[in-house]
Amino acid sequence: MARHLNFHVTAFAVLLAFAAPLAAQEENAPDAPPEMPTPSPEVAVAPEPEGGRPSLDQLFAELSQPEQMGWQRIEDAIWIEWSRSGSASMDLLLKQGREALEREEYDLAIEHLTALTDHAPEFAEGFNARATAFFQLDEYGLALEDIRRTLELNPRHFAALTGLAVIMEQMGEEARALTAYQEVLKIHPHRPNVKEAVERLEFTVMGKRI
Image (cartoon, rainbow, N blue to C red; front, top):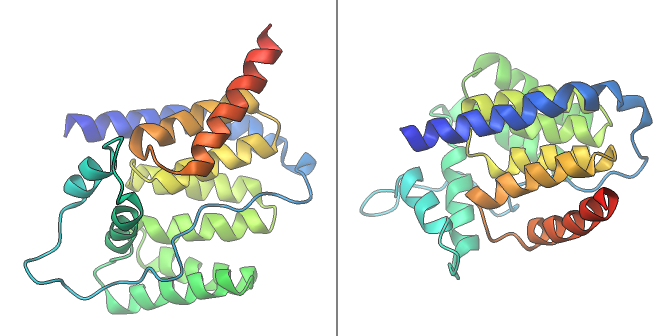
């Protein structure tokens, strides 16, 4: 429980420190933002495996191992758990929203995902997926608000924290982006693009400080 609280506090410390100035700069956002992190298209709510499902705590413990060769399988298992709302109708709205995102039909995705967040306000994945749609429409303030809600509900959400870092880097806030990416690595130390971002930004930030 204490470990989860630490994730919660860290996520909010990062978000609250950076969200306001970034939202204020929204009009100056670049024209071609990078992609936000999303689950693999193959990820879906899977049937109950024989012997039961591993807990999220077990999955994150395995994911945190530095030499974990099966991290992609574990990441997919985490996404599957995150995608379980407990309601077949809510799961369907998430599926429809993600499919619309894949087709780049962002307004339709927001429609499905807003219905989901309205009916399941404690389900983090609805807010995370909608943040991606808002980001693709350059609605950075709305994306940040959905990231805030995602992290409030799920402080270990490495994709939401990565999305926060992506937005900050796009806004030219390299030092803040670096901090957010470093927080991601504390939870999920394997993503090559996050490691590369940390290395790149460490060089950039240190150069500006000299």
